[in-house]
Length: 346
Image (cartoon, rainbow, N blue to C red):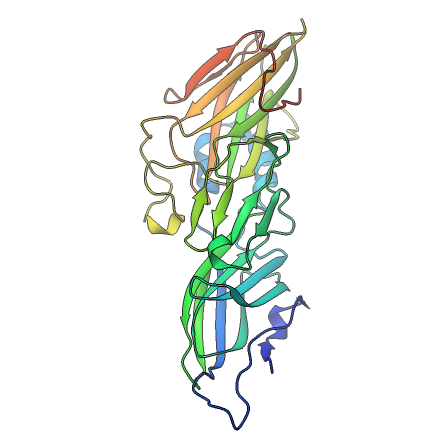
């Protein structure tokens, strides 16, 4: 027999029935648990408004700042916009119970009837509409991950803020309990603001970001870096002015310290530069003479989950991109020809 209890105020659609029931009247009751209520909270730790105010403070920045705010306001929000996936596992073992649900809250709760065991519980929110990211391998805890998929080494930008959480439940025998569980953001965002004033002979610009994780492991809250696809960026509609803005949402970069969720450091977005580059912008400017100039902007400051990083740059007549931040390395290839590897869309 299975039991699942829910609170309708927080739920609009139930995607699957849950959870383990236990004993009949004449059976051994030692493995029976009780009603276990879990209160979930999406906890957003971010710098995005601070970054906007710090990097784009001028009156001339207002149009691009507004465009970027519009683009990111649905990303940096502590709301479960749509789907949540809730799983229970025996310790380091297979999944025993699973619930898919639709919510539209930053806080919600479910009440389960669980057996008296030690269980690992995972929760993931906002995957369905993310684009390019799927929850895979979740039948077993050790293989459960959020995985980003690419075609010809090009991956789409994420369309939602992804949240995940994990906790261990010591379910007592024949007792009702209440637990709290936080879900934290596991992706990040970047933006490249390019000044194009007084530039001639440029037919188009495309920008990609690369150097980010391609997956997030639910079992230990670590990111994977088995591949390094180019991430598409969106050329935002800026109403006025001479600035262009390319923006994207993706997983974080590598770090020179162990890469884990941001809550493990008290000031998560302040960091010294790593000894080597961690992630890059690749900018391709198509010139009216038919040539293409590639500018590679290399950043050594980690990009962490929940973080927005804005880089300001200047476009020149020969297609070269220069930056104002002296810590960013720039390499340029004039008359660039597309080689092996990533298929760049120009």
